[in-house]
Length: 526
Image 1: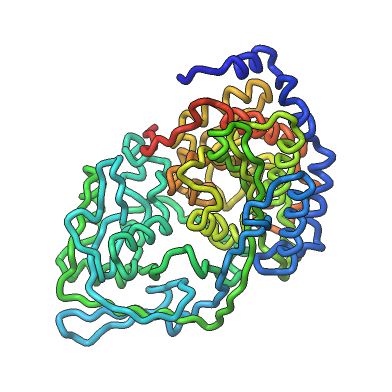
Image 2: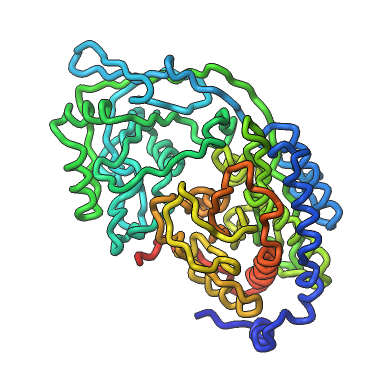
């Protein structure tokens, strides 16, 4: 356990923030939160769809609030960091995968047996290697690429990660580690020299499949023009994967059993087989959105070079036949929260020792694009970024949603979920300590949930891939998630204000303490 400074010990003794923090703390109140969120989630912003007029209004509003608070622009002399995007529509008929074996005529597959959402038209081909789950995790003594050469080849991998139903697994058992996500696997394949990735469902996967919401499914995909994966990923069905495994006399189910039995790789080359891939787009356009970024310089001459990040995303799902997807909770609540904290820290006469970065990301709903772009083009070094508090949906009480399988507490009116603290027990200790002043009911249940893939679904994840202690603050799903009924009158502003007060106190400690949160690279098995 880390030693507490006399300042923080005194704060806990009186169960209220000390006078030196009170101006900022007391500035966080429900009237302003309600007024700001009423505007941001109004139909006038038309659902804040990425690259739309409504999102541009949101961008300018956030920048103006940062300026009014007195923050410094973080992107040179601007609060706006350009995020270059490509919006496209895949051509499912012209997107193909062909398998040729031992000089025989090639067999060609289309959707739904071979699908790709790649923003560029490319044709490529080569030999194939099977790389297990596509994971390289030195701290777990696990590397699917050990003993195989992926350079210049196409890599076939399983979805998810080993031993996903084993609670004692070093891969966090019934939870997820940061390695189970396809974007991580694409970046990892690139590092090993691969030219494309084929991902297939786990042959032994049990239980229902998570569904895509209608609101998201109707939108054209977007991708980063710079800073995202540079090689295509194809999702393949059993006709393709069975043919590739049969070429070496293996069955995918047996291979997965072998890997999961010992959490040991079972990778291999697939000789005598060539795969040719072609990706095609029916429509394609370039556009630019913006991350909105401001900062407060730290008060300590040395520690001010280090950074604490407060973040959220401003975009949502636009409008459609059902109406406007106003996104009051998702993620108007997080955007308004970042703005409120910017005002609170700026208004407080005493400034933290480390610098504070306030960033509201673009295009989260299209694949965390703004945060991935920031992670590849950071405005302050990630190596000295000590913690991230990421807000995404902090305004509601969790309630049953047929799209989500989870146990829900009987009373969620005072509950806040913290996602990812397995990677930083230090972070969790600090928040719990500060929560003695605020009194929220904290839950960590999402860290034991691999079904919903929560760890990868908000803007803290790209920071976690860069070893930053990055935690998602989240009040849970509800039936209005990604629906036109996610409106401002359903927000629990009292709870939202408490969450922001807890973030204010926690962020102040992160910024002031001698030993900020550390990342534990190995997620703890439960």
